[in-house]
Image 1 (cartoon, rainbow, N blue to C red):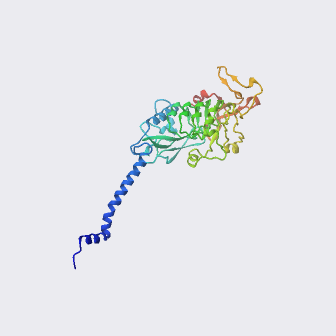
Image 2 (cartoon, helix red, strand yellow):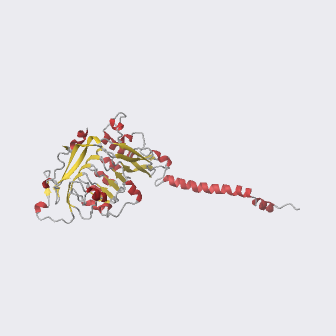
Image 3 (tube, one colour):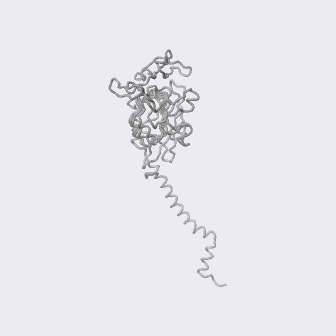
Length: 389
């Protein structure tokens, strides 16, 4: 038999399964590595380049959060012997040299665990999310331009006392801030109006005073603005009509699933009831809402409940009723000041609290409302922190 030619030998070799595998496998691996590396690199770069493993948390975000912590807990940082740490204060986990978003190197940047702390004077549990064991309440961090940015803070029902400082306006990638059910006091930060990505702002059931900042009209992406049950006063700024929350129908327009989870299932809309000092005619283009459970379980039948606000289009019969100047020369629009008044009474005994509760009572004294007389000691908000000890 004649010896096979060179071309015949090649053909026989190519028919061998082992040879085929040895020839094709390196090609497949090369293609897979090139495409996979490109895909991984693309995912790691995010929107701004840089890998997840090398990205750091934005220093401005950390400074803003630590400044807020110091404003709440006092200057000088945290002492391990501080009774507030023993008591499980949520901000005790916010420490220099640690990261609010610790496990971001592995791509895990969504909060993955609950921590609960009971707080003095409150029956509720502080249920706040942390990012992979990081700072309590920091719920979500995202990669932006090669840095991790804090995007979601949830500290609801934690019994926190203290202010909201203006420095929170530096958290310029925040899209969700939920602080309801605490004891925050003082004015609402004007610089929150700089948070152009903010979609959910929940500050209800606190003790905020003063006026709603007109700068919040810049929050054009805001879908939820919940300021109910505070101690705010003055007129509602017309600029708030620029927000989505001002015009969205609240009853049948729930948030998308992710936002609904982050906002405790809260419907979209604007809520201002329970602020006895709010006054004047509601500006055109603003349609405040009533949370369904408030109407159903608490007997609140109007989005203007316990406020001095009047429905749009309200007319005044006399010029005297149309406008007022305060003793300091400040102009108040028609319908101001509010006939309603809210007071804070503390030391109310409760089987759920050894130290007693502080409750807010609102009403119209001209109509005989007793504002909770006989149900605790009436305190001034400026002395509230000292009263609490």
